[in-house]
Image (cartoon, rainbow, N blue to C red; front, side):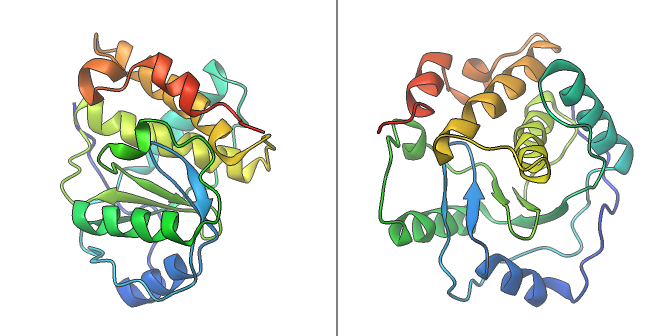
Amino acid sequence: MRLVRADVRPHQSGPKAALSRIGRARAHCEYALERSAPTESRSASLHSDATQPTEDLLDDIVSWLSSNFDLPAIKERPVVEFASKMELARLRATDRASSQRFMNDGQLTQREVVALYDNQTRTILLPDDWGGTSPADQSVLVHEMVHHLQNLGNLKFDCPQAREKLAYLAQDKWLRRFGKSLENEFDVDMFTVLISSACMH
C-alpha cells in the first residue's frame, strides 16, 4: 500500500524557508517523544520536489481518526516536507541534546527515527524514501496526523510523551485494517508504547 501524493500546502519560500521554520520549532514528535527543539539553524536536506500525500488521503485520515478516536475533525492540513533518514536522526539527536529533561524515554528513542512533527510550524517531516502506498508508509502519516490534530485541537497532556500513546494506537489500528501490526512492521510492541508514554513525576 502506498499513497499517491499531491501537493498539500505549498512551500512559501522553498527549502531554505522550511529549514528556517524547522529551526524555530519548539517541539518535534516522532516515534518516541516530543521535546523542546533548539533554535539553531538546521540544514535538513528537504526535497521540495518530492511527491506529497494527496489531499483526499489526508482528509480520509482525519475523518478516520475523528471517527475512531477522541480527536477533532479539523481539516486544516499540515505542511509535509521530506528529509533523509540521517538528517531526521540528526534533528532528533539535536532536539534531545537541547532538552534538559529526558522523561522516561524508554526503548522507543533507541529506534530509528521514522518521522517528525513540528508543533509550531505544523509541519510533518517524512523520510525521503517514503512512498506512501504501503500500509506501513500510510501508518507513518497516520501517526503524525494524530499529533497534528492534537496540536490543532490544543489538547493538553500531563507530559509530552503522553501524546504518543494515542498516536501509536492509531497507527496500529490502521495497520490492522490490512492484516498487519505495529509490532510486525516496526518492531514496536504495545507494552513498550505504554511504558514509554507514561508520565514519570
